[in-house]
Image (cartoon, rainbow, N blue to C red; front, side, top):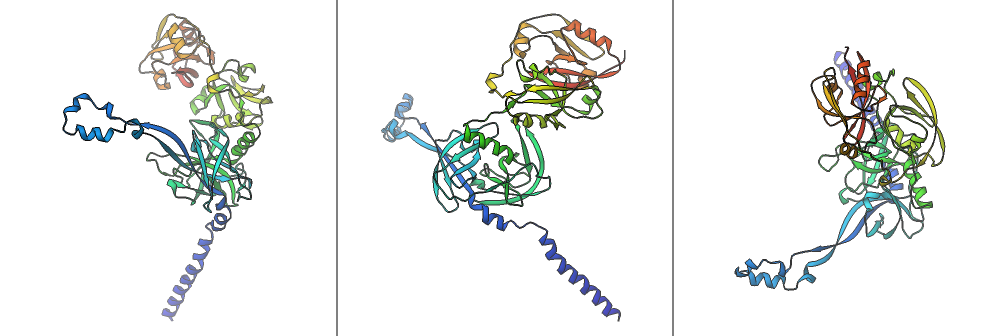
Length: 473
């Protein structure tokens, strides 16, 4: 009886295991139908750009080589001159793309087709087309192509706004030239800001993306395109678990503008911003870190015209809360040029609502600041552990600073070094007060005792706020 009970017990767990195995497998997504339906709309893109390569010819052989026994051999080898060694060799790049309309519009990355002489689009059925470049947008890294064909397979465009972290996603592309490779993973994060692409709130995934996947689609489980695979973070050149896709909502806006006007216009505020750290939040009297801290207001910009100030912290833009500084640029960029929007800032501890008329984002070359020349005195502070000097004419021109500010000549052990102030920094503001010169800096410092205050420094042309703990007198 005891043996029978034991046998029955083991059989029970064996059956439970067999029943649970299919159930666990069913919990994993099945991408086969999605790949069959939308895979044909994913294309391989190659480009050629003719470049002339020149090689040494006979007349380039040094005269000292004429006595060498092999001279006649090399002379014969080079005797055809430039015509033999000056040739056009096509440079080829390889990427991916996807068809968004059955009349031949194709989306890819700008960096895939940049400086291309000829763009070749290859479908899964081996048909090849020479594509026309409709337009590109370097800031979003989107390119729109057009091939002369009809009744083409297309993808289904979704929305990236409802995408959730942890959601399954699928990529199809041509990594390392292996056409129509399928990889899957999950959304790791949303709204990622990369140093060179502040106007794109990237989707971060752990989908295996490699060179050649660029420009390919990122699908959700509904078979909808939610992103355009664009970049990877890698120290080896290959996949390391960090992949970034352009949200499809950004892509759709860019494509529509490229179709209608051939270029992309973005809203412009005209400020340089940074994150609010815990220490900075304390120095500004905030209960928690949030918002985008204005470190510089560009002259003649919409922000300057609206009287936004350095030290203001933008916490709401056009009805959208700003938790981090990276939240602001994409919102500004997507705002219609010429529109008037409400912005809420924290200014000296108080909430202030300001109306701003948004202008069009100018080219980088058009954003220039005027300079003036001055010089002055020096001083040191044992309380902070730093010495400062008035800016010379040359330094003002070098740092592109109109007026005010003091140059940090040296930093010793003390509160200044602990705050992150370095030799060569230009202190522009302390405790929300613009610094006129060394005497003014000393005057303000003498008023402070046992408090943490924000300090704005200009470091090699880039403004940044730091939290300075001023010791008691």
